[in-house]
Image (cartoon, rainbow, N blue to C red; front, side, top):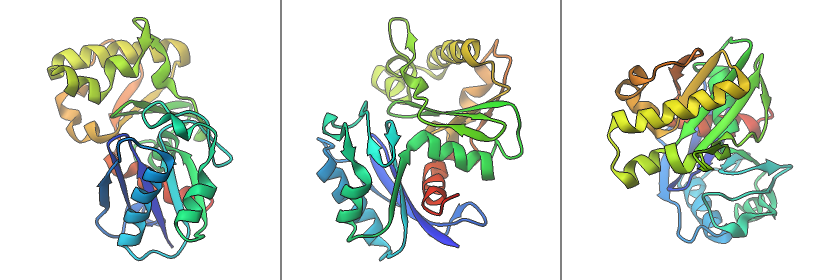
Length: 246
């Protein structure tokens, strides 16, 4: 069964059809840049460009970088504030010509995909996926069951949102070395571990492709730390799963 998944990020909007039996893309994903300003209407145009690139006409799952409840976007940390309290399912569904649309938090989508097809498959206890990118997204699982919309990237660290200190964007903006940035990630993981005592951390987002450059440098964390197996496609796969009711 194939369903379409779209992942809206702070820098790009990417999507592709997904084989839900294998948890993998059936075609190479298509990506467009996230518009600036990233208003609801402008982002909807970007989503439509991705979906229409494939001539898709079935259900579509779409991730959003913020809290989503019943298809309504409640926060907008790394996109235009105009997204707050928007009925995103209706907005995006209308722009896609009435296609059935399911909208959910981006890290939650990536986490569900990793727990089903990737690094968290078959794992019990408390597991936390953290996506490092424009911000830091989180998905918390207890015995494989999702606790939605946790938004742990906004935990306070050194007087600021943690994602303002340890995201991949901060690494790039400040020109941090892998060693320097990893020390920040380590402090963040230690803080999350103190609060939740997970058995497993899964590190996702685009930086997971370079896990060998920083994961071996992390010290003092008791939980097992592994890179996301689906890497930066996890959000697309999880979005498609949500659209299929999985």
